[in-house]
Length: 138
Image 1 (spheres, rainbow, N blue to C red):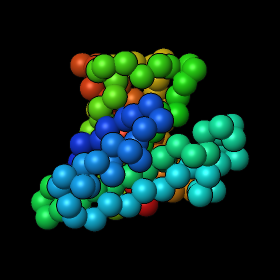
Image 2 (cartoon, helix red, strand yellow):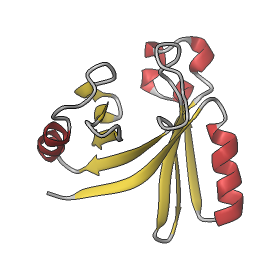
Image 3 (tube, rainbow, N blue to C red):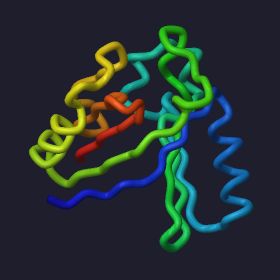
Image 4 (cartoon, rainbow, N blue to C red):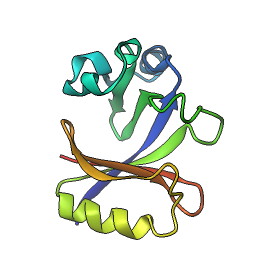
């Protein structure tokens, strides 16, 4: 199994501003994708289309990703639920194996099982220790 893990930050509408600031400070390559520029835009209200669905900053071995919060109003962003471990896998079988293992005893209220999306196989949950995990397999 081959995985890649990076820190993942969640913002409430100011992801692009924050990631641009970090890019100005750190340098490297920054990519920003807004929800309205993806095939997933139809799954969200128009007022969220300007939100960032994924931003990625990389400079050498320093690397992290971020997005704007999409779960409101069901769940509000508060200190403690605005960071996650982002796991990318080359195969959906590998992702499923580790996802299922880590999800034992997880919070069922915010659980999203791995499912196909236009960006790949995606799922997320808070584990039994309160750590948020986001999985993506392309």
